[in-house]
Image (cartoon, rainbow over the protein chains, first blue to last red):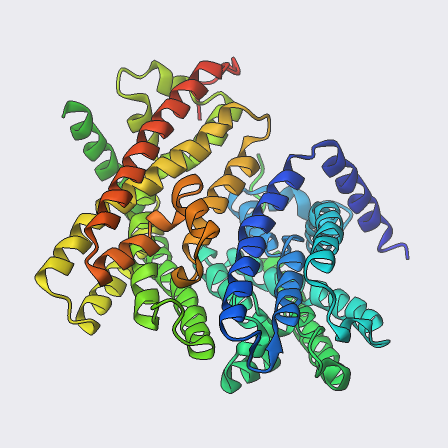
Length: 266
Length: 263
């Protein structure tokens, strides 16, 4: 409890900051409309052209699945890599390493807090708009849906933070991690079911999405499909496994990076 | 002409400076090219699942991404400085561009070089060349591609100037201008065949994302001259509009009076 108290304080401060400066909320709403809104309009047209069903999936299910992806992305957990790289390149990391809180934990709490307010508000508003405009799929009223979705979001947050922390920590060894970040980020986008719903994946791509950390971090997009009722134990297990592996790797890299830092003074 | 010569000189110097960090330079270029292939994979699987939508095949998607990447690469390699306008305005660094005897917009755009955009250029050229070979493009179609690249680039440049001009209106301009630019760029990367009726009208005239990629693809594929005139007209109007917005924005600018020589 004592360990997470500073983190909760950090989140509270950041949420207050975001409420006070609503500019980011406006931008995130515009981005959500630009990406998800336009995409859903296009998919509704394409589904209509195909008689309402593509690969045994209805538009309602595909739309909710993609909405969950974009909603989760509002948390901006992916910005963690760039934040770590900026700290390393600017030398700020030396100051932050000397603070009484673990640098890695501080950066993760910060990243979570920075997006939480927009995530909560836009997700609720977006869900209401979607529910009233296209309705809810039957799978979302199953008893298993809500508790497993909360678990999958929690594990997804932990996995995303660990994954992007690993990429960010490479900045201690590589002068510019941006190309690595792009590749990881696009793998998450591709296998997470962003522009192409999971139901439309070819079999081999679905397997990669299922067993890779990139796809596993976005299992929230799988929760609306009828197969979720039978698959959730496996998928939560895969997510938990990747959380342990990626968090372990991030810790090892961080310990090794700390040895590498040389403080030169100001 | 003199202004243009200075812009080319500035771009050349920025490029030389970026190339000094050789490893970073090469990885950025290659990384961006790999990064762009994700969109090709997505839309090709989309076409495989959904089939041909309004005459748009997987090949058209390759050309769509080619036009978009090439325009993006051309605008944001030599002219990456426009993306820094929010920082310049917020920090007061914009003062030095106002004091420069050169054209303010040209001086601003050429103040930075976007290394990764060279990856977009390479990716765009490869996509368009692949498209040309696979559709067995005739001379007229090749000429149309060559003509449409500057038109698409002009449209993207106009949109970015218009979006970045919002920097003069907000206290936290970075996030606002990023959102506006994303609002323009993102729909342009979507499957062009799915834009019909009202969405086609909106994304051709009001948020002209289709002018950069989807419409040029249709012009080359169907050898459509009325669409070529439309695309050139919309680009020209948006270019003039963006210049007016930029000038209006400058009038609202207030120096931050920082004790520096700008950033």
